Amino acid sequence: MAIPIFAILATAATAAVGARAQYVAGKTQEVELKRQAEEERISAQSRELQRREELNRALAANVVGQAMSGIAGEGTPASIALASAERASLSEATMDLSERLRQAALKRQAKSATQAGYMAAGSTLLKGGLEAAQLMPGEE
Image (cartoon, rainbow, N blue to C red; front, side, top):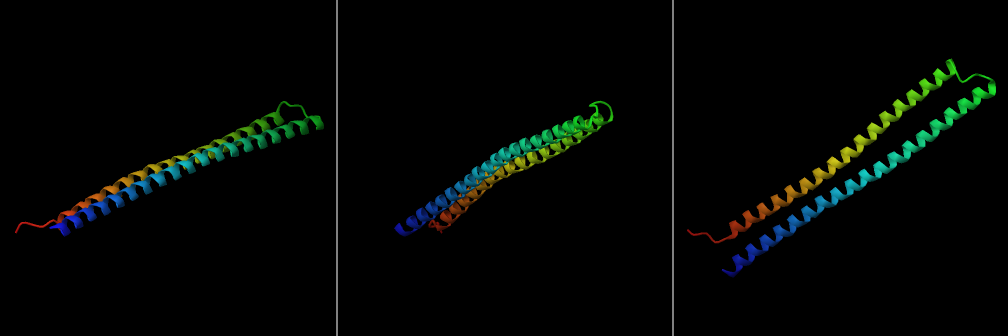
């Protein structure tokens, strides 16, 4: 009688430890993916700042070039500069959207990892419970 009880307890303990390990693994993966999403957000801000600085330098160089050559800041040169700024703005908006989508994907992966950890832990507990039940002496 003592050996079946020991076997049942050992099976239950093994299932509990395995479930806890799977839960922790899911949470660890969630934390890592959230950290990656935050790094991506910071990197995106840095890239956006760099793009804006480059655009400002290019626009300033155009203005200086026009002034040095005696071209007025009105009419066709101004409309060309405006069109160029609009294209740069559209490009920035597209890159910003792409970066936000990458961050959102990482956050969804983090949530999925947590849920997968919960499911695996629950499955391990159910399997351990079934194994423990099979070890119980039956009434025949």
